[in-house]
Structures are given as structure tokens and as C-alpha cells.
Image (cartoon, rainbow, N blue to C red; front, side, top):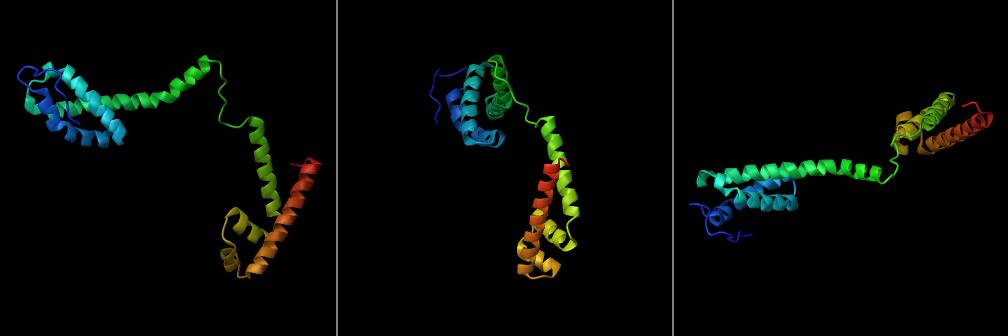
Length: 184
């Protein structure tokens, strides 16, 4: 990217020469500050434009790189600030249009039902015979592999599968019965 000369010189400073000399270094800085190449390029272009417009404020051509980098950092921060506000602006536009925004949390009655179901399951798991409970907890709650469960319990893989099947069947029957009786 080369800067075309819009005005031959601003005072004694040749803007085009300074911009071409320092734009790559400032671009690398902006890549680190902005986080991606597209934003860094946009920031650099806007910073060069702002620098050109305010060239009269530059007192020393030797300070151009630092001055341009500071302008670019401010432009990047401004860009990031706009991006951070974008979701809020979108929400306010939806509200203005009358679109209802749903609460991300489930309704209270659903939370209560979920808590009751969890308590019912815990109660039923605790009432399983010990051999079935151990297998069920390790396999379905702690989510260990079948071979690991069998190894930990010192049983064969076939025994582990049989106990797990029995535990699941008992749980299913007991939970269904509790739900049918309204005991949850």
C-alpha cells in the first residue's frame, strides 16, 4: 500500500514520504493491538487519514511513527468499543420494534421440576443394591469407560454390563412408578 500524494507537502514535512516509511511498522503494531489483519488494515487507513488531516499538529517529523501509532491505537480502541456495544445496540433496536426478548433462564416452575426430578433420581440410585449402584455411579454418573469400571470393581466386562443393565432397569421401573404415583 502506498500513500498517494494529495497535497505536495504540509509545511516542511512530506507526508507521503513519512507515511510510506512508517506505515509497515505501525501496521504490525496494529495487528497486535487489534487482533486481526482486516481490522489492523482498516485502522491504519483511518489513522493515516486522521494524521494527514492533523499534520499541522506534528511538531517534529522524527516523531511521526510514534504519533501515527498513537492515532492508530485510539482508532483501534474506538473500533473495539463500537464492537463491544453492538449487541446492546441490536437489543435496543429489537425492543424499539416491539420484539420480546426472552429470559435465558428457564422458568421457575421448570427449575423446581428439574430439582425434584434430580432428588428423585438420587434417592432411587441410593436405594439400588450396592453392586448395581457402584456400576451405575461409575459408568453413568462419572462416565468412566466400561473396561475401567470393570477393572476398578475387579469384575469381568460381561459382569459389569449385566449389573449396569440391571441397575438401569430397576431405576427406570422405580422412577416410572414414582412419577405415576405423583411421589416426586
